[in-house]
Image (cartoon, rainbow, N blue to C red; front, side):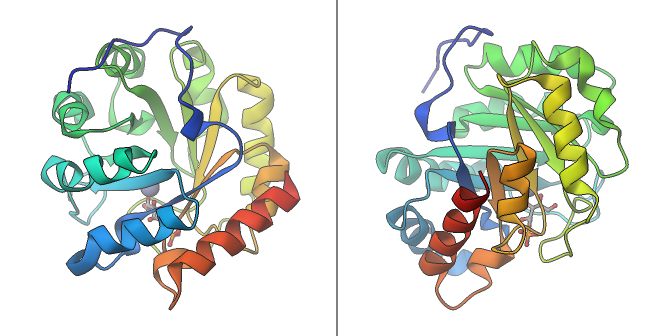
Length: 237
Ligand code: DX5
Ligand code: ZN
């Protein structure tokens, strides 16, 4: 489905607004992906986080547009959105395929391209929210010229590439600095090591969209885990 191009004035879909926990399917059981997505959406999740790795920008290889197309209708029919996180080199070569496969937001890494400004524009032209991610070693100032162009800034709270890593403890301070740099109109997302012990602190620091993979799909009861993390985040906001 072709979407209308976005501009800085286009409203952000309701599913992305407010405090949101975004389950990352990286830690899901891919043999029953549809039912796992259904379970967390039934529990209240509106944003499904979709991690793409190319074996270059990060060592692992994960999933691409074909898998996205396999879940996008289910997520949209349930009133949700898919948040696509590209941990890949040459991200601009892939934007169109992910947009066509049903992405609602497309996040690329600032470290993966010298053309971040152009990338944001290209993503908005495809009708998706434009997101820029930064690694733990990248300063917040790296995105200072992009705040008009980006709808979403993702602050990595682990090094990208794997689920289940420990949360980097200096992240709340970094998110606070990011919030004062970009102001209130940009979504700030955090990704890595988020669970009941960290979601509240991140919400307090200024993050609104919190990705959680292993803390949800690595448990016996993903729906309950989702609810517990959502409650922890609300308590910190
Ligand atoms: C890691 C991915 C994350 C991952 C987070 O590079 O970007 O989205 O799923 O996993 P947890 O929540 O287990 O740290
Ligand atoms: Zn991610």
